[in-house]
Length: 291
Image (cartoon, rainbow, N blue to C red; front, side, top):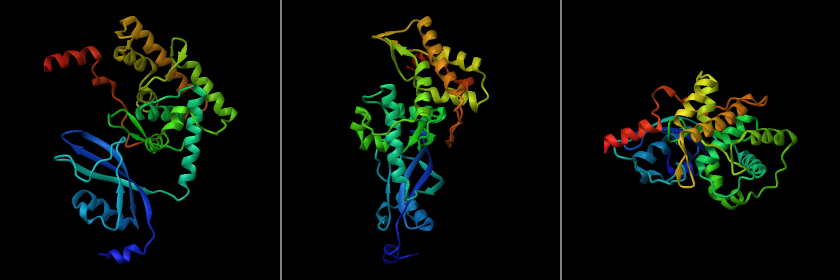
């Protein structure tokens, strides 16, 4: 085994590691961590020490970030970790990341979507923009829920540059093609009091169409059955929910029908299976029975 002195003289490398965690408390989920090590052999040692013997992490360190929550080295009771793979983060990536942030904020600015938004909002927006043909250098992976998506790197940027995202600060100039794509998306976005808004959960429906073999009719029927929203402190009527579902469905179809549409790779991703998903009414019945 190499000594600390020998390792100290070697250059540091930055690795993005994909891990699958399994626990009674949280089920199965994917986490992506940034580790610093000298080489892949040393990386294995750092990962092992991180989870089994934290005090041994003397010549390597790890930045653990799961949806904004920095956690310690301990695992939940009964939790296991399976390392699925890793890649070295290239030295030129910081410059590329600055460009992607500027471009992404420019897209938000084009829509007028300033203010505070959750990481789930930003991740799903990034997925839709990439699918529509906007070149955003964010890796998309599974989220906590089986069918959610998560844009790795975007969370850290939103956290570090909160004011830029909320105030739409960017000097990036959109190209004419990018503007045309965004205008097409805006045309089909649902409206509330005359103002466009971005519907969440679009990725799972887009993926059901493009990866899961579902027909547009199946996706539309599913959305009609599972849409239940509130407005001004009251639940929408069945007819209002149906209209809302149809407006979101039109947006989903606009995305997949764009000539610039491309399938977005989702690392570790699972495509939604509509067959066993309970409707809001069924979920309410299950909760009442459980209580």
